[in-house]
Length: 152
Image 1 (spheres, rainbow, N blue to C red):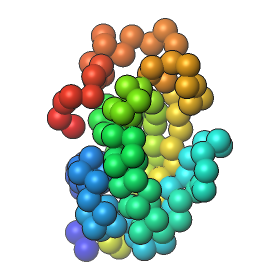
Image 2 (image 1 turned 90 degrees about the horizontal axis):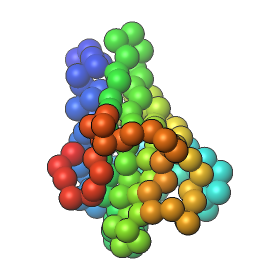
Image 3 (image 1 turned 30 degrees about the vertical axis):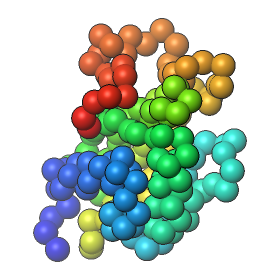
Image 4 (image 1 turned 90 degrees about the vertical axis):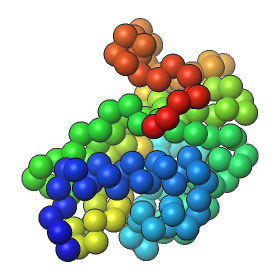
C-alpha cells in the first residue's frame, strides 16, 4: 500500500462525507474496515455503532428519515500518525436544525480505511435551539457554512 499521507487521509474523509450525503450504503461500507467503530456522546440510542455495515445503515437512515446532510468545516491530518481531526456540521433538514461537532479519525495503516471515529458535539443536543453550536462563537466570520444548501 502507498504511504498513508495527510492528503490520502483527507481524500478518504471527503469520500466518506460524499457517501454520507448521497446515502450510498455500499460507498459508505467501502470507507471502513469491516470491524470499524463509531463512538458518540451519551444520549443516543444503540451506540457505539460497530461494523462498517452498521455504520452505513445508520447514516442511510439519517439521510432518509432526518434529511441529513453534512458539511466539512475544517480538516487537520497528522503527518506522523494515521489520524485526523475534523470539524463538521450535521444539517437535519426535515427538522430545520443543525448540530456542530468534531470527529477524531483513526485509519488502518495497511488499507487506508477508517477504523475508528470518535464524535464530539459542540454542545448537548438541545432540541430547543435550531442549530446546536458553541455559544458566542462567530461561525460566519470564521467561514463556516451557515445554511445546508452548499457543496462540501
